[in-house]
Length: 97
Image (tube, rainbow, N blue to C red; front, side, top):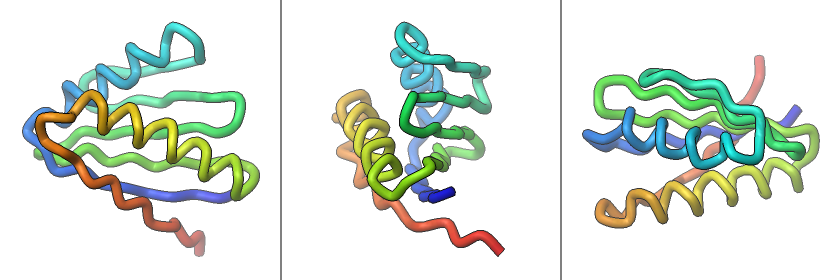
């Protein structure tokens, strides 16, 4: 399993979490509330949490190419939704112990 994480500091963390989840719920299996969400794509998934002004995104996939695709999909949509804040989504590998 390959994993990456990104954090976006914003006062609208919960709003963006819900917006992303609602957007993808039309096509994919999605569960969410104002503080946490899970989006399951055919090629990977994204766990989201909103807490104290930070939207935390953790993406996981079976292959590196699927991980890259999942990061790209989530990142591009967040950049579009949060365009006024011009977010810089910096994905970092998650190293499992």
